[in-house]
Length: 420
Ligand SMILES: Cc1ncc(COP(=O)(O)O)c(C=O)c1O
Image 1: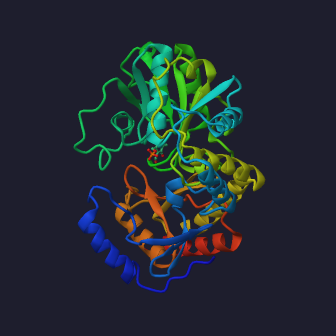
Image 2: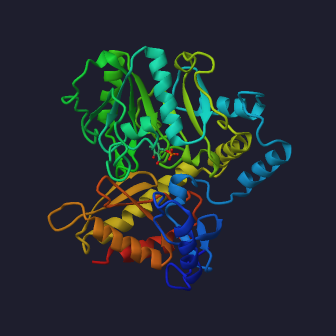
């Protein structure tokens, strides 16, 4: 469906709901748009006032197969009829095992792999760290500037941006060591510990919340060499880059190096809460029985949805589609740059493109980014921004977006990018 806006944004019903929300929902849980959603379908969000948006946020990257995909709905309905939650720790079920097997075969690691499932991206990262500690007998973690790994105590400590993610929540976990994000080269000059005390290095192949910045291919190779030299587990955090977003099922296959472990979440289950750690079997098996798990991890309804997502990725060739989408975005943005000097860069991989907005002195311009966002919203494009300095517009649209929707959305975005 094309975008269609009938009211001021937010519309009257959304404004009413915002008032109710104010009375009953914690102020600490923000929402970037004040628009309340009534329905979602494919690449569209339809709000409670009947406005139709094209969705460039995709539930912050959870909707790569699109909203309410018929195969995901069918898998969910079918599973709900059978059972909802016996809890894998109590009474296991085949779906969990089938999903573990499929993902273990799909991740770009040539060694035998195994998987374990959790609920959120943060939990996956947290467990990847636990497993790495278990395997190596070490307790330090290497992370990068601009990293985002989640909001639990461990993953918040690994995350870079102070406000809003860490402000007032210290003290943070010690033994987390940070070096510069390797956009060009891996620079370990600031590393002040013995590399042989590091259990794992955790890296996003494209920094997500940090501003859609890809790691250079050279730097990824250097990190792999560093990990090999010091027997450090290399963890690719593909929570945001995974499931076709960057032009391959997992971004790491474009870098020509194999990590030892993957953390996966977001688009894994078509919008249901599920996450996973998939990695070399020898590493995954190093934890004592009961050392990892959780009540809801690998919920069967979410596992059924995840199996449908893998079928859709393959049948609809969504990773290839991500490349086409990315090329269209880049062509549009490059066309706008000459007349809009504040659009200083477009960067990313596949359909994970970041558009960087800067001021006259080439510094990050968060206010201008916000004006562009508002203009796009009122014309029917729901977006989100990213970046340590809040000056990057990011694209996380469903990869199932139709050509006429993509063309219309790019027109809305190009007009918004021209707003001074
Ligand atoms: C790369 C990465 N890791 C981890 C997380 C945390 O995921 P969740 O919000 O599901 O805990 C995110 C979320 O944005 C992410 O982008």
